[in-house]
Length: 205
Ligand SMILES: Cc1cc2nc3c(=O)[nH]c(=O)nc-3n(C[C@H](O)[C@H](O)[C@H](O)COP(=O)(O)O)c2cc1C
Figure 1 (cartoon, rainbow, N blue to C red):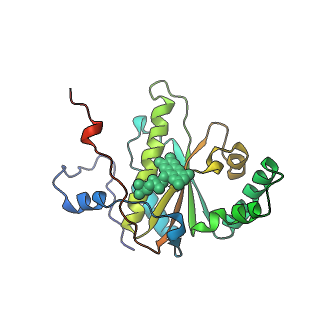
Figure 2 (cartoon, helix red, strand yellow):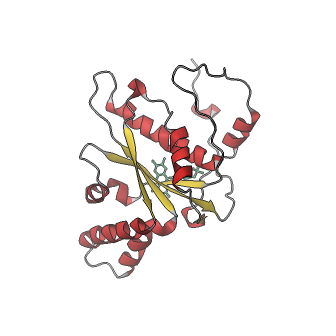
Figure 3 (cartoon, rainbow, N blue to C red):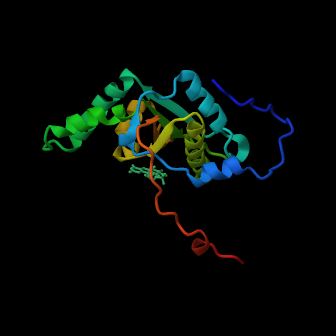
């Protein structure tokens, strides 16, 4: 498996220079539809390599205010049973398709990576900035996954906002899900989405 060598702390790093490969990659960045994800997903070594690249995101105060929970294999079904029970309790009159949908929720990709925002009190670093760092991390993971040939779909859906689900995943009261990143091999090439007009969104002073 290819893994770029990672610089050590205080190693000199290259100055920015024109990088057409990077620009092209950014110009075609897209999420896959979750329905277009299949096996294989990244194995343990590859997922670790993806995360090791991605964790060098902007992070005020070097707090690393995030962590990961990997949902793969049988755990996807087990967790689906948990969401089915939560959903059933909330909607006792829903028909039987509720269980079917919920039990399959995490089987939509070979690996579902829960990115947990875990902010801590810090007089110099507002919680908001720590949460922004978690969002930047999700984006970096998607890019690193692409570098290894995997597609990534960043979803939250209702489960990311449900405290019972958070508890089942082992989150503390202070922690929240920044995203559930569905990782797998794309079965179809995506098509481009409308691109916002950056100039129209920009004020120059
Ligand atoms: C924090 C966050 C949560 C998201 N949650 C959902 C979601 O629950 N369901 C969904 O269809 N898309 C969700 N999206 C959007 C997709 O991840 C994706 O960005 C969108 O489908 C457009 O594809 P693109 O990334 O190629 O532009 C979310 C995006 C973000 C940033």
